[in-house]
Image 1 (spheres, rainbow, N blue to C red):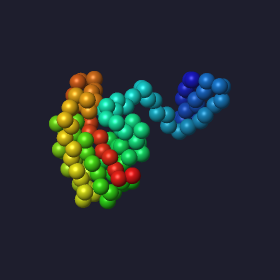
Image 2: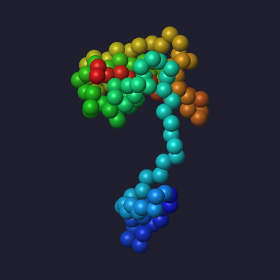
Image 3: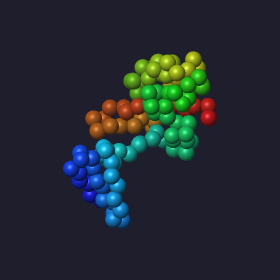
Length: 118
């Protein structure tokens, strides 16, 4: 794959199969991988009931019961954020935090995980 800027200010991307795609903007990603907690059912429901961001997913699950799996210090703050979207928020402390904590490059707990009723 190759990308180049056009004379009109847009982009032209040549895909591996030789086809060409034109666009006004180009988003370059670096291969982020979701590291899910080792909790049964999380991977199977990821993106369809297990969510990670009230700003990204709050509207779609507004007014539904939300369960929050506590994974680190920011969990209480994140639970309060979900209260903007629903009146029913339940916080579940993890008995083995190391099994449910994801990590980032700076070794800080990354996030909490939310379940919806669907």
